Length: 489
Image (cartoon, one colour):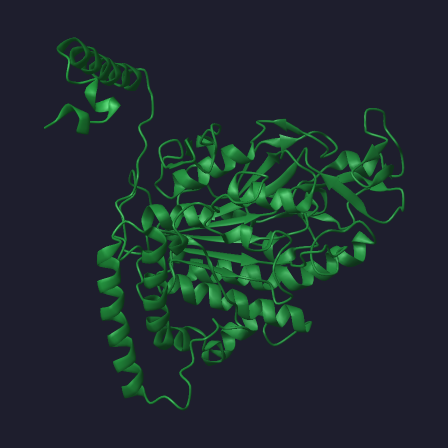
């Protein structure tokens, strides 16, 4: 070959000295990688994904009992000091302003300490103190693993939702559900691997960010539908016969396969094709999964579809839908209790800056019975043995009132979430906030730690599950996070 036809970079290898120099550098790099690995450097684990079948089930990094995960997310920030984090000092200092607490918080001047708006009582054999605001969930306290010392890095709802659900306060990062389905695929090829069941009132503040795929392949974003609104565009037009539709689908499949042969590495193209093919299968599977009315009367009574407000009835149907999806093998189900992209002041979500006694009570009436029934139903059917349940919100609320005297402001320094089911301890509390529930005190657990623990419970190493994006090895926990081993069963 004529040397003139070789690139400048290629000509560097023609000389013996240059060639040996480049080879030496390469060997040195390999040696360095080996040394770093010996020092504990984590080598990324990237799932092997067939572009034509991105939802195929894939193995975990290590053995774990959890095969599926149910995330119950409550937008708006549930008040931990009025639900699961009992603080007797709030009763003692009620109406007072003890020293050390801030005079101004997220929405302005702070008022006096306020005792819980609902009485706390010991529940179950564990004697866990929970409030009368959520008596049905309180009755399951022996099943739960409470995490009481969660702080977050933001006091704004959109960023708080992003941080909890994607590991970053900014937009554009993959959600927890997307990471799990990217790593593990699904056990049911007739339904999406990840379903987001939005509140009857609409989507949460950060919208699709909470269940988006970010820079992961688009196939792993959550498919959004609920009991009231099934997936769109699945119904065959009356003008098209079943036979004609089958022929159209067969032709489209052949055309797609030929097109994909020309662009085998185009992940977006593969995702689109896989999405359309899944939609075709969903035309038969979704009507079956949506037949909630056919559930036994005892189930409707247990979940509460026959009593209470219209919103409670619709949310209860969403809870039944969540169970049915998990029964069919859907890998991740994210169930939302609360909505409103523009805020809600406790009317459409848990954001109770005013009249918390009324607004939190309204949200609790919607959420408590159906959610507790869902968890109890999973246990009764033996599904908790393989399902991880995560109940969470974006931050807590202050132990004192706002200047208006009726609501609690945002508290990013301490809040409570709980886990249940596969792989976690039962009737257990980890960490604690201070005597007022103002700041995380014992065993502070960052959102990075929380998400690292969730991935671990799903059999995934949070330090090795990563994607190389824009020059950076990206992962759900960024460069942080430790598994909270004390909560593992």
